[in-house]
Image (tube, rainbow, N blue to C red; front, side, top):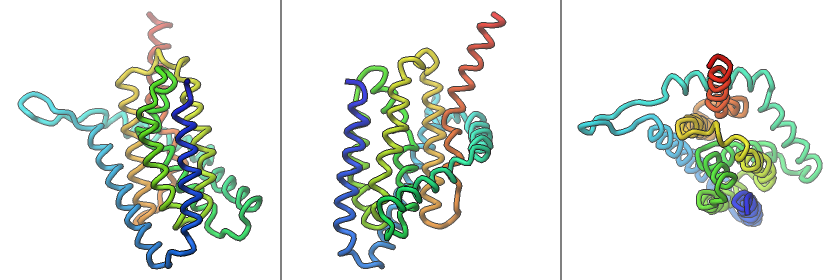
Length: 246
């Protein structure tokens, strides 16, 4: 059944997050700080490895070719401009604060946990490609693997950032669910090149999340989210031009 992968994914986040909240009280503050640094480093490595995998390909005689660099730069610039205009990150913050006021008034770091976990779980190749495969072919392998990873990381996230991590399941449901539902309609425009470019941009944003978590540099990753979809809209634009002008 289409959508099963996302359903399992959000259940894993909720279960892992709930377990982490339960364990939170028994973890000293210094351990939480070190754990967050370890997670930040892990997210940085995941972002770097995914970005490099998307950029480089092995050519003849074992040489490395670079791909999609210009498209990635344009996607990040155009998408960031759109995100800043829409103020996506501010909207996520307000949503996190609304949940906090309604369900966890005593949880001071609720919004941070909600926003951080939402971005980590929504940005990246597994979320995009997994949701597309679920919607196009009913294949759930990638999302099941993502569910396992997200569930484990949710334990650690919520043990350090609090119950806001549990509520990040809602943006995941909206994000991956929308991609899955629309995948059939968008199939003609989702070539391997377009999906690869979207995944590459997503992995660059994962790197930015990791750097923000390590407090090396604060990136407004929420406002960069439209960047992921710029390759798709560019391909759609080219198809329309070809259709109109033959």
